[in-house]
Length: 127
Length: 367
Image (tube, rainbow over all chains, first blue to last red; front, side, top):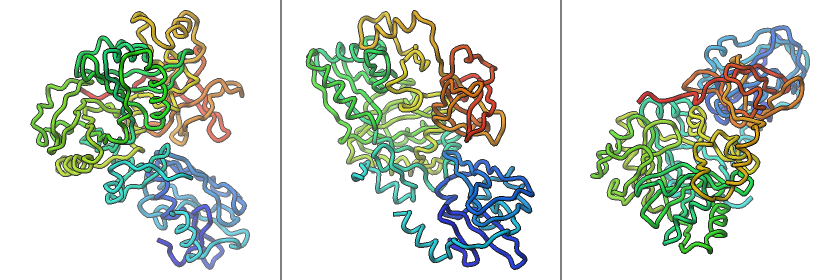
């Protein structure tokens, strides 16, 4: 539920940073479960520069909508276009096929939660 | 926060791994593991089973029962035959809603009123306040009553083997009494989904037995347990009003498009004078159905309807429609904008988006 190679936000996004200064971002298993069936993901334009904690899109489920906030500052290199036709990938594979944006990091990864800290947060929120 | 109220099926929901939410003070399943879309589809194509035990039941009995309910509601209660049901409302003097409800005629002098969970205490107090002038007793049976809704085209096939009561002859909005899985039930051909189906009322303690029996009988037919999440999308597709959304104590019955439950010629009832006046004057707003034009634009409850930067109305309910595959909603708009095929604008997160007024109900089952 909390892959070890990711860092997490309090708002339930994850980020997987690579050695080349890029990173991939999505929402967590806990987030997709709370949203229920995802029907649309609104993603930014490629090339957009977005600050840490700023909104990069929205995710709509049948019953609600949630803002997506970028875990770390970056420039958008790619967005997951397959979500346009297959938004359910966010539910089915939130850490894989349900990824949302790939960015070039323009700032640090400070203020993020490691898997243990995020697991504790989820545990607290579920009770 | 105070302890959430639990229906007699709470243990069953948890055993099914339902996602539970606080629904007006009740601990209720919003969805089961299959999810809202799958549950919605099950109800439209096969069957779904809902726990609606949180709903309120108020029994009115005695020589003055009919007169009391005629006084409290706008629909013509005297027109109901024994075993018949109708949709109606409690209105304030100004024609706005205390609540909406179903009236079941149990006998010449006995009626069962089924009201919304969140309004039950208010409704019971409202009936009690007016009852002393009439010769009848008023009892809140809600805590002692379980209610289970079996909805969907397979409902009859699923339920019939569990009861000796012939179900096919029960017409839409009629009911009877019989045993289901050995449990005495009121069997009602009603629902809040737009599909054929039955609502079963029984003693609270017996509800798990009925639930388990229907689940077991329904599973081979593709029945799924169904939560409040799909209950909302199902009723929205059929333009069925929900208190706190399409109707409340600021909206009167005619604006809400519920003129068909208002029988102004039946004699006096609370709210009649206000509705007579409202009928004589031009309506300033109207409830309409709309679809947004872009897939990304999903209107949600309470979002403003705007024109030239000013708020002119509001969305009462909005969601992506699983059956229709478009983003639907209901909204109050100024009468001059309430034109079929016309465009309105809805403000979604600061952006005014285009929507088209379309025919309602959005979905109607093939009979």
